[in-house]
Image (cartoon, rainbow, N blue to C red; front, side, top):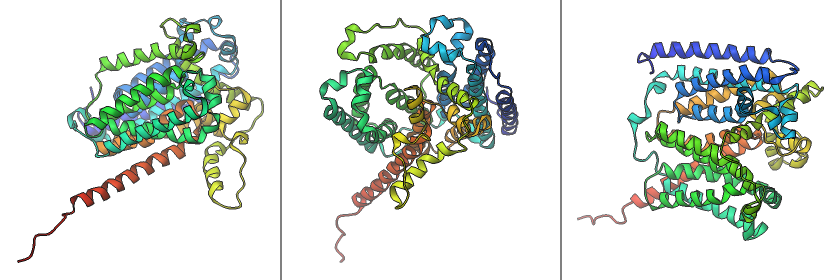
Amino acid sequence: MRPRNPRIAAFLLHIYAIFTGAGAVLTAMMAPHGASDPVVHFRWIAAVSIVVLCSVIAIARVWSAAGVYAAVFGCFHFGLIVLLASGYLEPADLPPWVESWVMSSFAADAAALALAGSLAFASGAALVYAQRVQAWMSDPRQTRVATAHCHGVAGAVLVFGALASWCAIVVSAGGVTGFFSSYEDYRQTMSEFGTALAVIWPVLGCGIVMSVTGRPGWHRTAAVIVFGCFALVALPLGLRSEVMFPTVAVFIALARCGKAVTPLKAGAFGLALLLIIPLVRDVRTTGLAALADAELTAPGLDALAEMGGSLHPVEKVVRWHAEGEPFENGGTYWAPFERAAAKRLPGLGRAAAEDDLRIMNVLVMDRVGAIGFSPVAEAYRNFGWIGVVIVLGLLGMAMAAIDTIRDPGNAVLVIATVYVPLLINVRNSFVSVPAQCVAGLAIVIVVGVAHHIVGSVLDKPDARAAYI
């Protein structure tokens, strides 16, 4: 139960922020360097991470930007070590390539850095909630709105356009059978369309959030049906992030409109994810076309183990620095802006994207393979442990700022344009985030201007009464 007095609430939030912020710094500074038995450290790290996650969700609410981000971040960075710490999995149960990194002498350092990031995130979020305590104390269910904005039709058009473009690319690249291939075949086939896909996915996420939270009608129903059909094809193909992250953003946007999903339904949704993710992993190795040859995993907690693999890139950047590689000092964060400027300004040369090792997904793919990435890994790669504390603290502040936007319409549009790219960044590099956020904001601006112009034309009287 939240305090009714804003001053008491702000005081408690400040105390929480100070406590978690200090914990983040101490955890990062006192990471167990070169631990011979990382599982011993996994036990206390896993326990603290669960406490921090539960406290963030209790403060921010379940379907809040900060609460969901903390939950997704926790699953992708602590899922595997929680299973190892609890004894649900033994190191010998893991595939050899997973065991090789999670039992290395740098794994405990990576887990401690992720915990420091989680604590810093909680601290940053609490600071913003304390500053905007009146908005934090308000209950979205008391401000239930029939429609948050007037751009629902435009959102549906974005969904139709994005998915039509994706289908056209898949068919042109691999034919109709491209929808039923394995994930590796899909990646190879679509390798030449990376730029187009980088536009399609944020447009799709922006569109489905806008359409679901817009005015009811056939266009909203059609957008949901089309997105559902896309999910039925995309999930077996292996496109989990492209389906699940926009879906989660929809739930958050609905909650901001006072239409939050009940805790029971939220639990059912989480359980469904735990069941679906291992099945999708198994199916995408062969594709639907060879489903009979796939070995399906029995339902369990394997989804947490797989998602927890985002700790792997953290382990790698810690290892690389320990082996003598210097920090990038902001180079990976500056790279997308520099590359964008080089496209438009004459005289500025730039390396090809596949040769620019400041782009973290390129570097990891070149050295390790397709293991994804992490905001913790990127922050450490640039500035060391202090970078992890600062970057994750700023992310916590950004999530809380979204939660405390008073106008539901503005909150929904920010969720559609900014929140989805930041959520996807939980397991990817930063390089695409600025462009996706700018593209989303540009879409909303264009849609708003177009709506204003069309409304002005339609509201203009066709004729004036004759003067007598």
